[in-house]
Image (cartoon, rainbow, N blue to C red; front, side, top):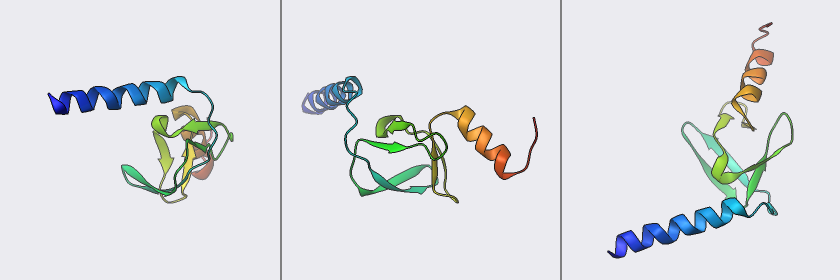
Length: 88
């Protein structure tokens, strides 16, 4: 029951953070394949293309080789096409 209580508590913290739109602290991260590590803790990172704030919990798209993060799959695809000289 302690584990269940702990998971419920963690979920509540996660939900509160999602509701809190005040993204105050810019994080510094190192991107790896399938994960990232913090150099400096923070609430968000900025999209490398649009400069849009991306909450850390919602970060899903990045390029390890370029150490770039993207706010959406569309932006990631746009950047991929730019880098590989692909025309629509």
